[in-house]
Length: 329
Ligand code: AMP
Ligand code: TRP
Image (cartoon, rainbow, N blue to C red; front, side, top):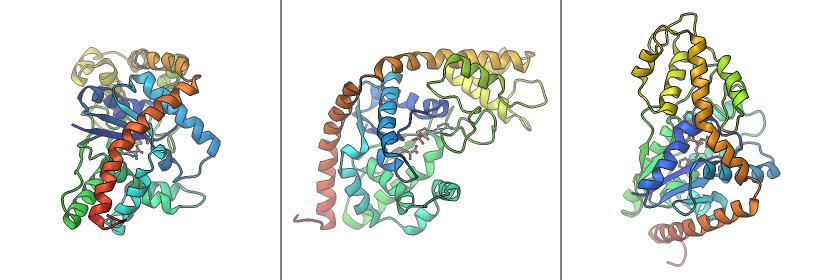
């Protein structure tokens, strides 16, 4: 089974990214043949960015992923822009992508509404580049959080349309979202997802947060006027989110968490969640501190990954070009 996923470059990876995606990437290393993970710097330029910060962010993300357990010898970890086939395939696939489908993408609507500066054509084409990322490897499975469902459906549609028109060439990938933790919510606004942009600073737990910061954010997490640690019922979004987080980080089911905290106050419950998150994220933060300073080593890992990625993607590109009548043939 070929696994592929992509992640935006930023040093501000949060608990939602960790639980919804990064945790699955690490598990995927056992099942993936190969497991391919891409830091998508070309997607990052679809909204305003600072060139120097972008390069730094790629290093931050690389170090976070390795610290979380990705082993560049057991998976293919690389920077998207190092493998030029992604951009070429993006253009080729744009020929079989419906403008109307792109217009329906929730992420495009959200991001373009929030955009104060230029709404770029790149933002509109973002899902086509994402389709190219995956289809270039003929990946079978795409582990992501819930918010990527629509993008994965679109890439399936693009693969289907390509194959109908040019013959069986591309693979329709399957979405894989975790059963628990596919959509972690903001601690301050538990009806909104935890997010790098658009989320609240106090409601977002970052992977690199110090324990004191995590404790503070959990203490001020929004709950409700009741007192029951239960996930169903009106206004229970805040508590439900904390139960879900605790269930993942402690690897226990949500019912037994409700039973354990029956009769306990919200204060004690939040304290337990904070403690469990600190324990869960600390090893990654500590390893990150060791890995991040050695940028040569990070670049060497990315370069080795890009070489392996290129070998696979270039074969697909040759087939796609041939099928479409592009180039000499
Ligand atoms: P991004 O940082 O936008 O590249 O997202 C990386 C991965 O994290 C994607 O697979 C997202 O679906 C996932 N993700 C982002 N936010 C959340 C969240 N609040 N809960 C669960 N997964 C998330
Ligand atoms: N759009 C994804 C996100 O914001 C990142 C991404 C880019 C991706 N290319 C991908 C995810 C390919 C899965 C597969 O999270």
